Picture: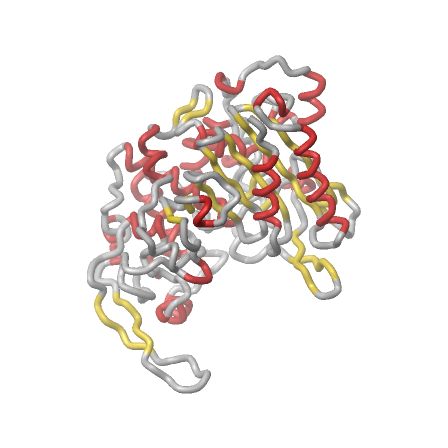
Length: 434
């Protein structure tokens, strides 16, 4: 893990969170629940915001049971409703070998929960007229002009099929990238060639990596399918932010999002003085949890990945999520207009996401601009309300925004897989009592 440039974690401007200001809660109780980094969000008794303390104990018990069963090392959970924190708990261990307890201010690699942050960044530039969702990517990265599409030839046996190239019917657009309908390194026929043409190195920058991606073939004709582009697609969005704003992506996020929201512990790398707060990653094996190293696509100090590079805490990320609950503002800071956030949280892909298969969302779901959207909770068999939106990360983290309930929930964990996310969603839903 590399140390972050000092510019990314400069002392931040104090932010007055008017909508999350003083409440009738006991200040000593607030201090017991929230570390300093989140004390600018009001902490209240769950019942004051229509949630049940008794039912939230079920959430805690369920999370602790997963730890006791050896499925997880540790976990941090947070729920904010009506602009106030109703639940914030840490369970288990952040490092098994050292026996270090999980803390509320533990720093996690949030992987693809970076994507909605990137989505907000590009939408800020859309509002300023510097970028259009309909713009071809080549407007900002010329190498994306005249992109080709890889087609697999029929083959027998288990050998990888040969591919041939055809011209793309049209150029890929900013909207295609944000909705994962671009076909850029999304697991199809072109991805194998892309890994050869544009290998992603930890010493790359967004400028060098995305320029190489422009020569890579697409997996399908733009806009005709939904397939998840784990890094390349939103990394390309991050490069567009750089070109359109004149700032490096890390600086844009720091100046335009993290400082205004008071996200003190969020950045692309963690400075040495905060390294002790970083969680250890684990994977499940038949014999128990096994320590995992931070992967190279995260452990870089030069490639500021819009697709998956941020580190954050529950206390920081809830500020970003609450901004979305509030349709673009938090206290004195307004990042987006309300209609732009509604556009972000709308389905842009018809039924492409619903029928996309293994990486798609299933019936009753759609996909917005970097977030999945629950179109019908009953059809989707989803524990979130209809209209909810959010996204998850490769190491197990997740969040969503629920406008019906004026609520957001954050799950921070260091072990992916299993039914944890759905169980967490169910535990949050059953705790609402008004």
